[in-house]
Length: 222
Image (cartoon, rainbow, N blue to C red; front, side, top):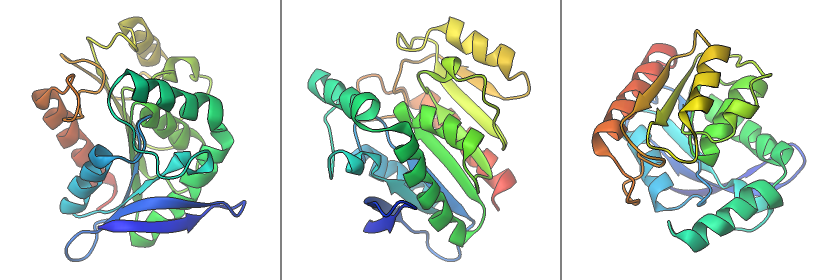
């Protein structure tokens, strides 16, 4: 477990948290950060997928704007994270760095992508646009409902919280209508329910969503 550097196609170098399994990897997993950066929670998530047998990489997408971002789960952190994700970082640059990460993870076999919050949106975009994504699991990705002209190129599942004020159920309904063959799960929980560093954490929902994600990976990556 530790930090390393990768280089994108345009020459930009960025940090990546790497978590490796014991024994032969079952495949590669790319974990896409929330707006709070590659913080302790994202590192723990990566460690969890490594413990399940996958070589796991979590790229620091904000490195193009500001290096080593780790924000707190408070109003100040949320405000700064939104600035970095939606004002500072160009989408095409984030996708370029994700492509480089997916290619690196592909050295260990087929690649699954999983992302949370901002990372949920980027997971959707990766599934639609990037090469080498075998399957994907998107958690409460805000803005996906406005991106439905695109089509995922791989098996995809999505997770939303019915108490999430950031993503109304009307948006989830639009996604369901546009993607009738995509499993879309709604949990009795709020935004960020997977994160045990947040007050909105809901362990039963987090455990169920993680098992569904692992089942997706077992089906497509092993």
